[in-house]
Length: 361
Length: 222
Image (cartoon, rainbow over the protein chains, first blue to last red):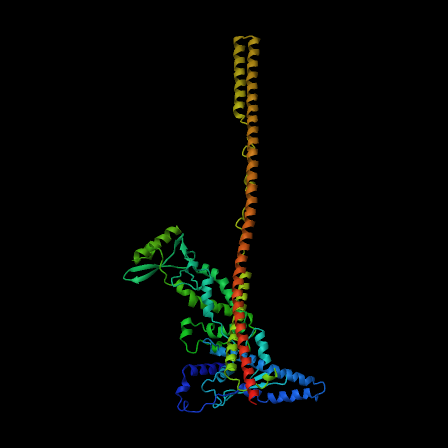
């Protein structure tokens, strides 16, 4: 089922992004019926029904009329409920249009959204339909049908409402970990507060604080790089232990935040973390990085076991170092002018070795 | 309310617009609520695992144990006095021998013995003076020691008080900072949530009035 979700979701996403339907021969000339008339059909008989019940009550034809009064109340409440229900359904289904949508979500949601938002290829003419039913128990049901479904997708108003009120969701939205990692850079206290702008983001010239530079006998312990032609220059080395100690509590806090909604952690795992891809790779991939065989399942893996939470934390940390922190740690030239200049490579190596020898003595 | 029944038929653009607007507002509200939940979990984790505030004076130890009165055990220098007594005895013996050989009288010997006695008295007086001086020094040393011990005890008390004050003010300042920050974030998110709720209500009201309007025209046309 997981594979079908991924393949169908990605196929539809690609079809829509490529405007493929516009170029299918004959499509543009074909009559397309997208008039689902959801409310019209749902309420077509309610007028008569209402009048019948009301008359029975008014004329005293139903004894104490308890059932009739209940039905009347349900009918009166129905339009408002319908509107709320449709709002809830549409707001949930709109998640499929987010750029980092996890294709491991049930593919039916993608199809339902295409039907309801009248996307090409999902019209009545193409065999798709959506129907609202007012049920006897006062709840309502929205049923999506069409050739792609093995069985209709049925959403009940009360079930959906209860899901949403318990702070969960029908369609899982993937948290944007790129935003959370940008926040993390700022919160980690690795940078001079002056390099943080009013927008709470690091400025272009942000540098890691002096205190995290690796030192030897109180002096910065630079790495010497070979520039060619016998020349070299110093590159700052950072005290990674110290950096890790500083950053870890903030990473743990960010991850605790994401894990407060475990279904979203699964989405983040599937989309960003499991494959260990880079941010650039994620951006470049049309289908977005998805875990495929390494996916965690919404049906099978919730609630998340402890080992998965630990793995999530490890991968999150890895992703942060690899994609966000590394740019501030690599090839940084000293800010002190005399240390930043180009020098004779052999001499510098010799001097460094001598310094090391004398300090060892 | 009965007017509403069956009125959804062809209610038109205002219903669709209302549903779309309402769905966006609902999504915004849920997003704000989720963000708030994430922030609370994050803050809880940070607060639970932050470093303890360390009392920088905690490891201070009293140095009074290392203090002592260096004048407490001064000894009396008796070597010189012993020599003086010995020399006096030798000189007396020699003089007595000389007197005996020269046939000196008993009066000379008595005078000599008295002189020797006097010399030994002087030695005793010298020892006594040394002992007195040592006693004075011991007392002065004791006084200095007590003063130093009082000063050290005072230093320890001050350090303890400063440590407590430091921990208290750091804790207070940290808690206030965190509370303020959290409160600001919560206020912002609550504001976003409230705005989304208001948008949702207004979209729903718009949609309902659209339904009602359509229903009225439906019944009027009948």
